[in-house]
Amino acid sequence: MKIAYFTDTYLPQINGVTNTLSKLTKYFSERDDIEYKIFAPDFKYFESEDTNVERFYSVKFFAYPECRLSLPNLTRLKTALDEFKPDIIHSVTEINMGLAGMNYAVQNKIPLISTFTTNFPEYLKFYNLPFLYDMSWSIMRKIHNQSDMCLCPSLETKKLLESQSINNVGLWGRGIDFEKFKPVEDKSEIKRKYGLEDKIVLLYVGRVSQEKNIDILIESYRRLQKEYKEKIALIITGGGPRLEELTKKNPDVLFTGYLKGKDLTDIYSSADIFSFPSSTETLGNVVLEAMASGLPVVGPSAGGLKDNIIDGYNGILSVPNEVESFYQGIRALIEDDSKRIEMSKNARAFAETKSWDRVFEGLIESYKTVLNRNCNLKSA
Image (tube, rainbow, N blue to C red; front, side, top):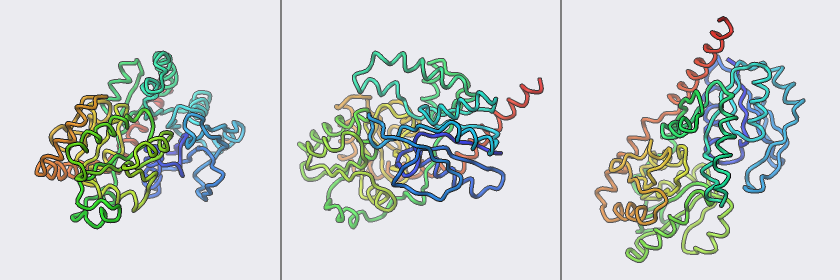
């Protein structure tokens, strides 16, 4: 099987899409029945010798300077695809590079998979653009309904897409490397590294941007400080358009910026509670990373988080977009050590059921379903 992937985000960027694609290529490297090519943005400062990746010129995206807007050379793209002769095209994103892959698939009658990973229509509400909500869903329908199957990462997102009249929706979940992300028996050494000895540490990992509801987290933290004072601390890990602003406004919060490798696993291991206020997630990869690290999760009962946070078992579900409920969820875990410890163990047990191999085996089955369906249509 030959698969061509089109994505508007890839290494060296750090996000859920690039993490998933990196794991996927590693999985393919251990199989001899699959060939793949990834069509992705170019970065002048990043060099790679991976011959399976075709890079195309890109510029910074004005709304998110750390993201890229691809401007693919369509002639070079067509030549590369004509030579590769893919059996299936998988468009991972819905912007320029993803759309280029879709157009090639449609024009050349190649089976097409699309992926819905980011709830852009919901984001509009956080940028004072709610009047574009209906139009954005109209665009999403047009994009995804031309594919043979639209994959999404959670049951809640699947329900959302179907309610918006997007057809042929399938599931492509996410896994977790639970050998890389794992609990430590003694957090004291790592906490000492960050000057957080003898504190209950709250952690957020993700984009530092408007749609992630970080103001709810910080307001909850301020309320908790009034009760627990120096007993608690907050770490915010990640980058984004609000990082500089929030760092200046909250000097007592530890903002680490982007972390990877051991630095990232250490920051998870240093924490006691994962506090994730975003109500726009289609899944929330960082929630699985936190659970694998033995952290109970407090997050809103919204979107893909509902697939992974089992209220009262491995975390606490709060009312979406509500400070009081989120604050009370964290407070309950600070107050009850035994509950926090029990949920920590449950979180790890839940994460251990989410192997990447199982996720990718399911993805290959989706490809086979689409290929068989197309073969049957041609022979009919």
